[in-house]
Image 1 (spheres, rainbow over the protein chains, first blue to last red):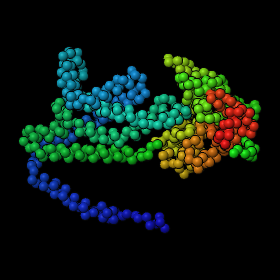
Image 2: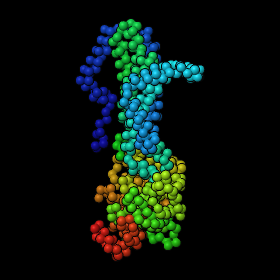
Image 3: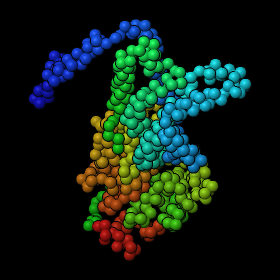
Image 4: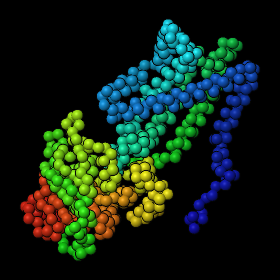
Length: 270
Length: 271
């Protein structure tokens, strides 16, 4: 009987549940703001700058994806070295994380771009190398500094995550004859990643919001596009509003993606 | 109190000529200044159930953990299936396995069950059980799953196959851990105080599974505080005191007619 009475919520009923009065009011207010900003603000520049803006959005996403992926690939050995490494590995790893986390990203970016980047042309063998066409551009320095920044923060997160995996489970892996590498790959790393996932989600959102700094070294991401509109046309607020919308949309997708990842995993790790 | 039951009649008695599955000789273990094992010898022939009893700090868990080198013995001989574990001194002067491959191969023949279960919490029960067969022993996944389902059914957890360990009671987790150990088709089962972390009402279900294994003639080394259970299932009981074997013998003798004053005292305290 009880099973038969379990409420089966149909689409219409679900919509009526969702459409509570306060929600409708909020939606109307949001719509009013959107409509007002469309009609009361200046958007005539948008078609002209749209291709550049799309390219900027792509660059921002690309930069975020590449630097987060490379960063986490570095963070895993950095974290592991701090947990089980001999001093010759753990001390440099700790130092790296401390220095990176202790200095502003803008400083790191400028040291790499204006420092290292201006040092390179003084060496003819670098200037003549096949890498020079790449090294004279801004993006390698952007990728490098955002990667080491992410690696520095996440190295610390992974250290905690590795240390948090119960020793007994690693001992069980050893007791059943797993090699060190297999134990790492099958037991230790998956659990460390799962433990770190909620933190990594937040950190990746922060990383997204760090990307506009690359505009200061001439890389044209979506933030740089907004700045250009302001410089060209003295239109200030409209591009910034659009910028906010873009970052919020990317954040929404990120959070949704991470939530899906987390949902695949039992939320009660022992 | 311990009573003379009928259980020993159920016992599978090992043939005298059975091969020696585990042989430990003059084993010493030091943790720095602490001398935990002071020359212990132990032997388990095929089909024997060796129960190791003793007070807290007597070295019984350390002895068990030295058999598969979860702790590296400081000196002494450990043979599994007649194969001696080769040890060497590392740069710090600690004794470590000389050949990692050898120790991994030997470990994969010993099914260990821990006090705290130590199931892998990111895997469901069925994944826990097939993990070692598939990823260490190279069994085909389908074969391993079929075997694992049988084992889970055997420990009464067939319907929990896709559940994560955190959603199970301690008794269920320990039974799953026994299934995981059985899945490697071990030559010897090693039990390290398998019921010590359990709520009293859950101990029975785990002891029943272990008892069934003992009765079907599986070779086991069991560290336990459950004296009544040790008496029922063991073919040989070893009483450790302060890192040495104080007394050993068949359970009837150890529990029925202990000779050592310390063992008598111990049995009075736990009984």
